[in-house]
Length: 211
Image 1: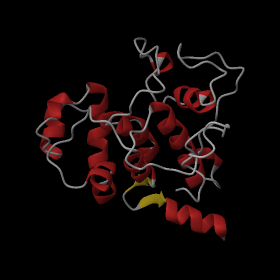
Image 2: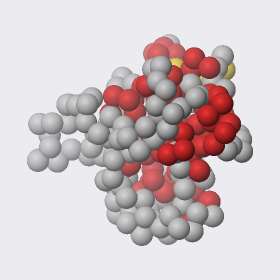
Image 3: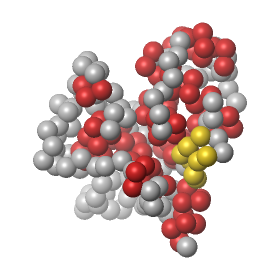
Image 4: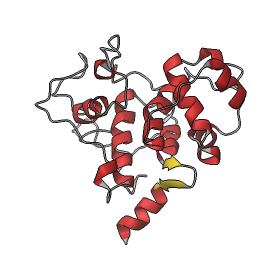
């Protein structure tokens, strides 16, 4: 992932952080802005030779959709691009209550799935209810999952051993949907895009680039 240029810690180095930009700090909690930046970078790196599957970055001249992410924000092109592609909840996707992106807030497990699953399935997420998630995953805390994220959690189950939950969190009967995600866990999730048997890993993308 690092060799693909995906895991940038800061949008650009400054005098105050040049000494720490080479530190990944895998156990550190990943923020909304970091994950948004990595999500676009990882997807576009995986599909470098397939423009139809790439996400377009937003222009700085675009009217900001979130009131707390201005066009001057270094991560604006990525965050706005995800919103315009309908990959994150925003007023553009008819979530009129979501007017803040909260760029420096911790990313939760359910958000990790909700933002990434549309890029794995490349289609609308299936309708889902609490009972369906309980019957498939058997999570004891399924009732704590946000209704919007239930669809992503259910869709992830269809990916078998390549599901994000299995790859990142291993075998578990507790999903802990509100638990913050570490940088290492975010990188593991973004290491593979696609459905079982029809996806691409960072390893494969790197081999293709080098060839």
